[in-house]
Amino acid sequence: MTKKTTNCLICNSKIRPFLNFGKMPVANGFLRRKQFPKEYFFKLSVAFCKKCKMVQLVKTINRERMFHKNYAFYSSTSKFMAEHFLKIAELIKKRYLKHPDPFIVEIGCNDGILLCHFAQSGIRHLGIEPSKNVAGIAAKKGIKVTNEFFDRALAKKIIKKCGKADVVFAANALCHIPYLNSVITGIKNLLKESGVLVFEDPYLGDIIKKTSYDQIYDEHAFYFSLASVKKLFETHGMEVVNVQHQDTHGGSMRYYISHKGAYKPKKKVSRLLAHEIAGGLVKEQTYKILAKKIALSKKELMELLSGLKRRGKHIAGYGATSKSATVINYCGITPKVCDFISDITPTKIGKFSPGAHIPVYSHAEFLIREPEYTILFAWNHAGEIMKNEKGYTKAGGKWIIYVPQVKVIK
Ligand code: SAH
Ligand code: TMP
Ligand code: ZN
Image 1 (cartoon, rainbow, N blue to C red):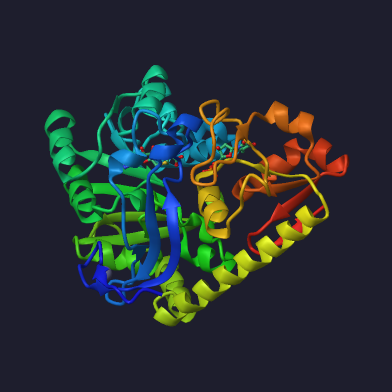
Image 2: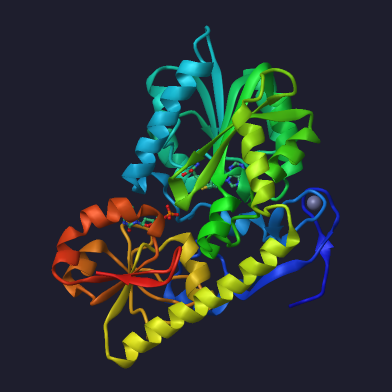
């Protein structure tokens, strides 16, 4: 464990890592063979700030390395997520956009999985999406989108051009942005007096409960709890008025934030905060225990995989998720152990996984090869995948999962 300290991305206090994963690649950096020699690696480690309670990456990498014209994550590959965003779109329309000429802004709109519902209803909207390929898909759906990074300066430009917003929405986006104070200043300026920020991100409480350490990778600069979110927005004169737990991405939290005093906070907010305090989310010791559990999970997974390989079993992976980059590279899963990963994303197929260079094959190839064991890297989509793969399971295919515990499912 390194003793080196760095500064908290939020409050600038000294922080020290509780967990080091070692050298890691860019999690969505799927690559071709000729790109292997130039692959970028960095040291992935995580810290807890005792002052502002934020769990965060110690080193973040340049945003252009992650979000660019070949960004590999397309939101609309999951039907479950499409349904999830349809539901929240309906709720936002009903609750916040009933008056004449409402305006909604989405930070990190990706391929337009949410904003399509506002475009279709003729509601004034703007998507902000720095990754050009996915922004282009959104634009083709008739969504107004700007191919830029959101921050305080961009908020100013939007206000000038479009006026202030009734709703700012962000899903799995704010936790991606290390310069979060600038982003929140931008959101605060952009929101009308009655405006609401609705955002959701993977929830730290679930990461701890399930030891889902695969949420930790380059793109996720922050691992939010209500405690850290509440403190952060308070420093900007805003407050958390509601929270709703979500089943997405292995357990997420949706936060509703307004200007201070604009809405009465729901009792749920103080109840969740008390629950987090009782559960130790604001105590350093919790993270030391988490680090030990992660090391144990790695040991158990590698013992299982090595045992299967010794018995000559054929193992593949399912879902070349960004999360899988952490598991594969931290645990040391090589193409000798897991000889391919099945994925439905056209731009990932035919490439190799970052770091370990496991080939990514199409789903058709998965059905042909029928591995005896399949590591479910997309465990957060288990419901959807198990339904689709009943044939594989019935034919004797076995699933390996590692969250919340390492085990084989038949
Ligand atoms: N909201 C989508 C996409 C999440 S992936 C969903 O939940 O499925 C995160 C997205 O945030 C990526 O598309 C990435 O390009 C975008 N992003 C990263 N930094 C950003 C920034 N500063 N401003 C706006 N979007 C950003
Ligand atoms: P995510 O966990 O970041 O949402 O990424 C899901 C990845 O899994 C993405 O690359 C698409 C892939 N996937 C499949 O290959 N098959 C499926 O049925 C689902 C739902 C996802
Ligand atoms: Zn801090």
